Length: 210
Image 1 (cartoon, helix red, strand yellow):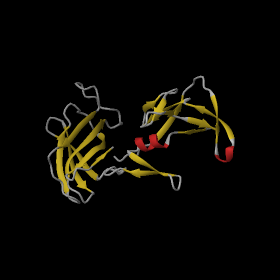
Image 2 (cartoon, rainbow, N blue to C red):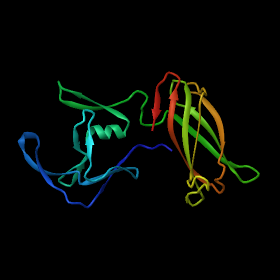
Image 3 (cartoon, rainbow, N blue to C red):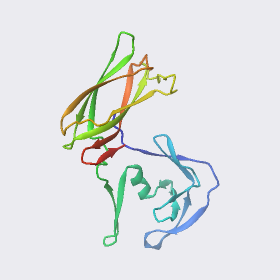
Image 4 (cartoon, rainbow, N blue to C red):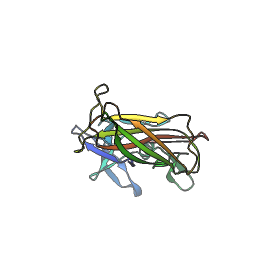
């Protein structure tokens, strides 16, 4: 499953204060600072009232609410997307750029087939296709297991429905495939699943991270 990071802002009820700021052409406006919590895919990254600390130690608002729209610091958005921010003093332009090896979509595609052994233990057979021209030396993938109604199958010893697997010191050459399989032990009853590529490490030292 390929995911693209999405930003979801959940409002939090609290006492807020108005702060006058100046927009373009010296127009005076009133905004609300830090009156919203910020979540990414359900994971809270900032609570209402918190500030965002820049690399130079300065604190800035995590959120600005103006005219019914919530604004976030550009650098924080870039950080959540695993990107960099460049600023040109000459053109007064801020630009979000990709970090080396940090493309938004994973550089591998995974084709899978779910089977079962004689004891009913699910087995996930998969084919990894290296979409890049570079050789892969390791990778990690999460598989989330569900029953036929997409209700999570909970593994007793971990109290979770996911399993982490991967390969170290392997070699998948650029634009080539590798066939693998994994036993989903403790997850009997699995009939549906999601795969999420977590990281891919290349032999040249570069990497892709979710």
